[in-house]
Length: 173
Image (cartoon, rainbow, N blue to C red; front, side):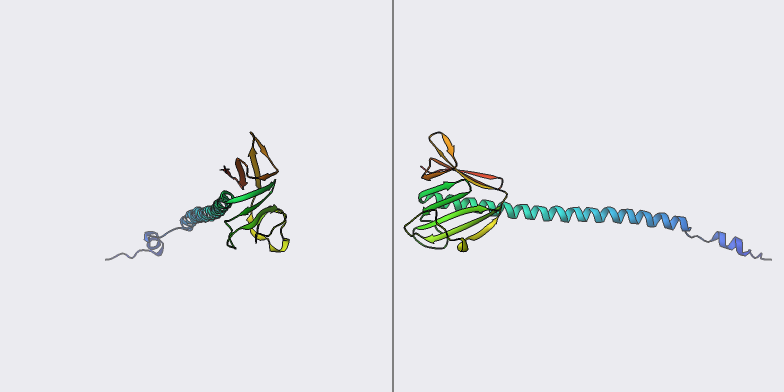
């Protein structure tokens, strides 16, 4: 004769998970998801910062190369601490000899260019300034006779230009 098992014995033989085991698994999955989402967030943040830094580097390098091109073909320069005026044949907007200026104010660098009119090299029209970008600093100094000068008119032996964290030394003679 076959014995029938009782219901309590029948339930004990079934395989299953307890509530505690399910909660432990959910907690482990939650911790893993938190770690992975933080890693993804860090990766995206670092990528964004790297992109911004590379764009800033590209902008500063391009600006320094453009200043170098203009200075090396300049007929005369006028330097003030945060301004650079020049008569050059390497204009961006006009052909021939132009008067151009780099003017730094309120942590923003502006560019001015006009076909060369006779007159004061330091004259520029405020409404015709072209915004080049925001930079932490911009300074220009002339090296003449063994020392640096913040103000100078003419063509110096060496021109020192600082844009952001980059420096450019140009031997002009």
